[in-house]
Every structure is written in structure tokens, then in C-alpha cells.
Image 1: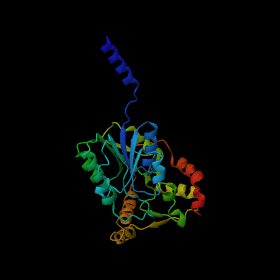
Image 2: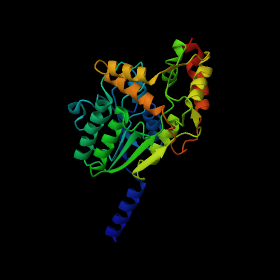
Image 3: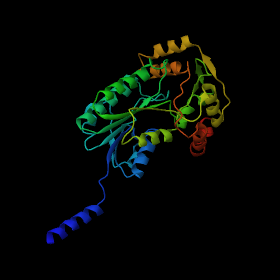
Image 4: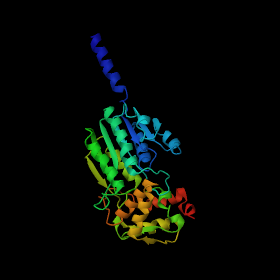
Length: 313
């Protein structure tokens, strides 16, 4: 009888103990997608280890993350053991298309090498699942260095033996500073056909899609925003919210290729970015309309919080 009572007490005590927190790693937690994803994961009760190389964004990440690794994934030794204890890894790592970023390394290094190091760590740590933020492509953009680097890592992930989901987004609503980087100069170059259409997705929508697939999902998910806009319309919206009169000019394809070629030896990332911009402008880039937040709502929000018009003056 004593044994039965003890067993019952043990069972009751076990029921009262909180379930252990699921442990995940978010790589790129300070970025446009990674940061809202970090917030969602913490609100849902996950224990989160974050990886970021941005020192100036580290303070805001440290307020949410349980553990912050301020390292560059390009250095394999710097991230040794980062996946230990994690059940799921979500990678938002990748090179920026922002023309003002000082990083000069090409996308094959920034997107493939960094993620490959993270994947090797995940395999070594026997992580159950890997979620990767990739890019939606077309027949014109698939041959660009930017997309090739993503596809190369996708293939490595498929061959890793891990459970995975690859998320291909048709562009992301960038930060206000990125959107108006050229607007500050009073112009925006137009490559190819400015009537080609696309539907970039809001970072919050992209983060929600990532969160939805933390524990399972199809191997490939393609997603874009609700609004399908021509590149001219996108430019006009950004100019409008920045309070600047549009003064666009068209760059002939041959000049775009020459500029890209000249920049390649000195700044591979910038050359790769120009190549990608040219190739994506040649045709529609429209992914399934999964997101619900519009670009106009994004710009309105950031105009009030980040003083878009003042920043572009």
C-alpha cells in the first residue's frame, strides 16, 4: 500500500512539473526575418540560442535570446558546438543586397560557406530539423551568383540526412534605409523592363511562415506578398513615402554588365548584387501569394517610427 501511494505521489508530482523547453537555434537573429522570429519563438515558450555577427544590433537580440553567440559563421572554428542541445536550427543567414553594406565577399561565401559551416555543426550535433530561408527564382535569375549560392546550399541540405524545410521568398520588404538608399540621391536606376512584376513579402509574414514550419512541413515552401506590383510602381511607392519626387533613369543592359564586371575583382558582393538586379528585372518574379501584409502598410509604419521623409531629405 505504501508503494502504491508513493507511486501515485510521484506521478502527480511529474504532472505538476513544467514540460522541458524546446531548444532552438536562430542564425541571423538580428535580421529582418530573424528578429521577429526570435520574438515569436520566445512568446511561444521556446529556449532560444541566437547567432549574429552584428555588434550594433546585439543589444536588442540579447533582451530576448536566452543565449547570444556574437560570431561570424564564415569562421567554422568560431561556431564550434553552437548546435549542441538544439532540436531545430533556423538559418536566416545570407549576404545583403543593400548597396551600402561594406561587406565585399561574394554570395558564394556569404550564403553557401556560412550556411555549410552551420549545417556541418547541425549534423555533428544530431539536430532533428533544419529550416533554411532561401530565395524564389525564375529562369533568368537562377543563373545569377546570388541564386546559385542558395541553390548550392539547398542541395547540401537535401543530402545531409536531416529533416528540413526550404523557404523560398520572392524578396523581402527591406528596412526603410535599404528601400530609400538610392532615393536619398534623388534617382533610382531601372534595369531591364520596369513593367515586370513581383510580390515581395513582409518580414513579419516571412517570420510567421518560418515559425509555422519549426516542427514540421513540406520540403519546399514558396511564398510572396499579397500585392503584385510592377517595378515602376514599387519605385514610385518608395519615392512617395520618402517624400521625394521620382527621377528614375534607365541603365542600358550593356552598361549594367560592364559595371558588374568592373566591380567583381574589387567588390564581388556588389558585382553579384548588380547582376541579380539585372536578371530579376527581365521577367515577372511572382511567388504564391501567402503573405497578408502590404508594402504600403509596411512603409506607413516605418514612416511614423523611423521618419522616412526626414531620413531621405
